[in-house]
Amino acid sequence: MNDVARLAGVSIKTVSRVVNDEPGVHPSTAERVLAAIDQLGFRRNLSARNLRRGSSTGTIGLVLEDVGNPFYSGVTRAVEEIARLRGRQVISGSSDEDPGRERELALEFCSRRVDGLLIVPAGLQHSYLVPEMRAGTPVVFLDRPAGDVVADTVLVDNIGGTVEAVTHLAAHGHRRIAFLGDAPDIFTANERLRGYREGCVRAGIGYHEELVAMGPHDESSVATTLQRLQSAREPATAIVAGNNRITVHILRALAGVAERPALVGFDDFELADLLSPPVTVIAHDASALGKAATDLLFARLDGDNSPPRRVVLPVRLVPRGSGEVHA
Image (cartoon, rainbow, N blue to C red; front, side, top):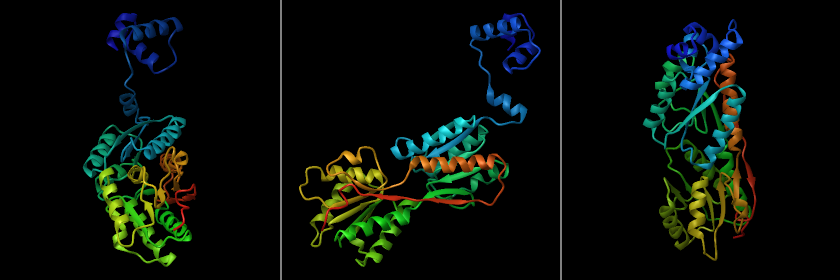
């Protein structure tokens, strides 16, 4: 600001008034100050200004599992759209399912004085956030709940979704239905496994441990699991995939296979309807998840002091062909 004031031939106070849009500066003087700012490449430090004033920093933090996953890209987009309408910017990072990385990102965002936090938790210990929450920073967990703090949470109906998937396959005559899920210590994976078990019981087909393979999964492990399931004395005739990535791994492993098992995937994904056969999925709206969580965060920022809420969003079966193969 000293350099701008010297170049424009004005006082530092005048520069301050111009950059903060305060009244009392002659238009020609303001133009001279702005020209000097452009020439010197001066930029306002909005965070420092807002902290001095004790007001909003204009940012919210978003901690995701993996921003490269199309599902979380949809969540991010919804968060950004609402934040923009409310005059906020979003800073985000991926935890890669590492609790330590999640904590590092969340505390880094807090050190930057974000107005609020949205977190897809990677771990089960979130007491590190208690000082921030007590200081007034609202935190909303989405897709999974917090482990050891009571906070606002937005989920999807994981159990109901896999119950519906198994029920659908059983209605097409399948009695040997396999389930390939993510690591069981992940909340969504464990909930979907519970739904699978419940679905088997409801359909009267029983639960068989040999038909279950929990991750983490990659392309190689999925191919090996499918080979085991299909070469068994009583092979699986249908599969429920626990998330979109597992579904894609299954499709790659089955490429070129003439007789495929029926397949229902949890999470929709791009081009699923254009494959041959099109993939039947349990769909839920990633943008709705992001929107619900962000709306809840802004309600807290607007002064809502009601007890923490737990919102569960519905899912729906989208039959396209792969899940309608008869046993």
